[in-house]
Length: 265
Image (tube, helix red, strand yellow):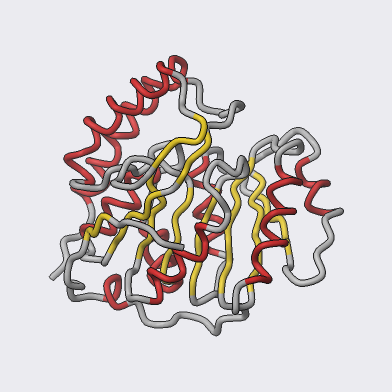
């Protein structure tokens, strides 16, 4: 898979977050967290595609579905899901918010490489191979991007959502610098680094990605954005008008959390 990357490369800083020694014996090579809320209709296709694709990679893998309080049959979808080669498990997260769900999933991982993706297949599943390639090159964080050089939209976002996204990018740029797209729900990490990074994170809602990226930059981690051909999918649980005030508050919370974080020696 040929891609054009935007490098966000810093030499690793001192401290455990940058070097991230192994914390627990890895059971599999790769674990993927899929946070879900009322996804009984979209989740089966996502799991079908994941368990069909992952065995084509030269590694062992495991999928962790994190149910963030669904009131539909999401749990039953996973319970009846069968895979010959890739185990799929579901865990619950009582704390509302995608950030809380991803954090709960990451806490369950032990793999050398870990990542998370949304249940709507907006990012092509084969992007996993490129993410692993970049991790193998030595990057700690690999972020799929809809806005870096080489990215494209197969199905574009509605005009209102594009406008809101641009405003969000402007508001968060002081936190994330040159990162073009913090909100694409497809990120992969060096496993021990991810587990330490997510243990430090506090935000539970939509803006948790900003906190993850900002803390990674603060720790001096090597990060890279890889362009994707992205497809907008209807059915997002984020209502722009309804959630705009809460998102603004979360951006302020990221600033506060980083100010209160203990400075590195």
